[in-house]
Image (cartoon, rainbow over all chains, first blue to last red; front, top):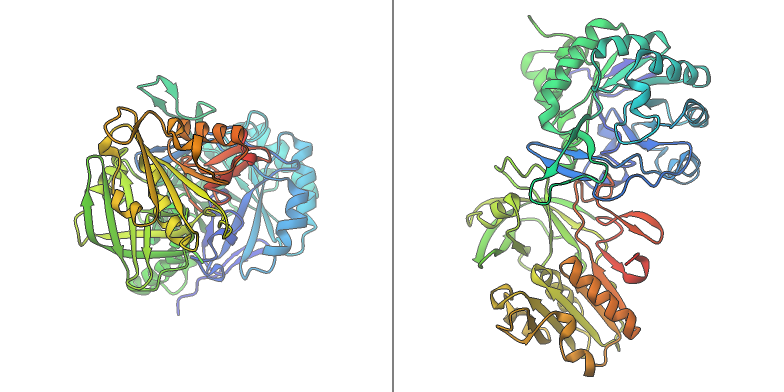
Length: 303
Length: 252
């Protein structure tokens, strides 16, 4: 039997596979396709202090082996989550993490404090990297001082595992990760989407309502893998890898690059059962390679 | 319950810019409502990373077969239309809400434009307890109106074409039946300008009306929030809360 458990500070994953925020709804949407208990965790849709309508349609553009989105954190706010959604999902036999976002530091802090009080949410993923909102979001995640400010403030009110999701739209992601670590992050997850855009040549108009959007899907994998490698060399806290992971082999590559766990995002749209398949595939790889514990894979790239 | 099923393409009929695919699988099909859709994976096409949402045209539970009528629009649907018989087709279904079931004494009109005729056949079959079903089908030209025999088997078919090559000339909203026919429910699927015109007509005549939207989707199951329609209740997912909406919920 291959050991698959991953222990992070205050957060134990039964295996390294989680689902990425914004691609898996609240888990319920996928329950017909995936036995959620076979996952290490699910990270629910980005949640803000107040209700957000998100950006106008169109919010999506397909690209070669990927897609752009500018959804803009549409959600009904943290109180609605706590009252209506949390009771439905709190007893899932997996870790349920909440992705927390905000327009200013006070909003982040208030929302995080409210989630802190939820017994069955063992961790939050602090979203300082959403490229699709005008205020806050990525603005905090692209400078060391910005990320320090927000992580420090949330750290004071949030007492469980604090994961910070990093933006790839920076000059040196390792420096940003170090700043998050210094401010009290328990782990960093990366990458959020890469800022991109699409134009319809016939109409000469942008495809997305916001002109720009975040690129995700298989096409971003090499960039994500490189950044996970750079960050994992720089920080001592665990790194959670995501960005284009579509198979168990992809997931293993991220672990070899230094990720302690991984998230599956856009691939859920193409195969709604992919997350559980990846979890199984990691075990099969370990059996084939004679690996007894998936932890042995972390940072195991041979140069 | 939604399912992820590997089908085999067992039969195919090609049209000018469309194809009727008959898909068969080994397992029993889940219960499907009229107006629901399937999300079809496109294999081997660089330009179609995401699934293609396709209306369910017909279902046969006895033989586990599903008919999809697909218009060649861009690379992804072209690839699907070009699939050879015997090909494997991976499908997520059934998705969306479907049309509201009519009451026994309703007089319904099913309005389809272009490829929007696709979901109306199966929906009509599900309404076979009604005295009569009327289809009003519109196309730019005769060649756009496919599989008319199938529709004639389920009800009375009225036709318009923009060029007058078949039926009455003009748009579906120009047809003479609007002046005479007594109907109390309209179900419409087609291009946005057509559905907006039908909705306007329905409002003017005070007739209950549902339309099936085709906003661009990514996940198809209400997770990504890409396909939203701005309604009176704000942004809602067309894939999950739609694709069928009563026009009273919409802002148009």
